[in-house]
Length: 126
Image: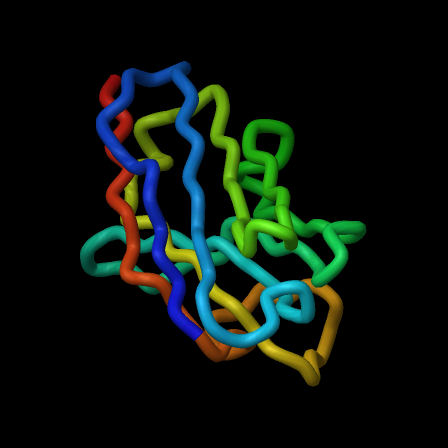
């Protein structure tokens, strides 16, 4: 399975960005998908996760109400819509996938995922 993340960039605080992650190989519709982010010197942290069907989502408290994760199984794509961006959202964002069997329909830990994309940089200026 290969994951290709895109959509990052430089944006002013309060703005919006839409990250996409395209998957190839395997059976995308059976994967739990997630987004994580990482800044230099810190551990990778959970942002959002979505179940295989899209019916269940989970968010980090820091992004609830601002970010939305969605998936399009026919296109093997997961999207992270980020609104009301803050400077503290600046990070490299990674998408991740977990093939079945899963321990849960959504997954919030780095170790819960099998496959990772290459990351896309998001920089929010104040």
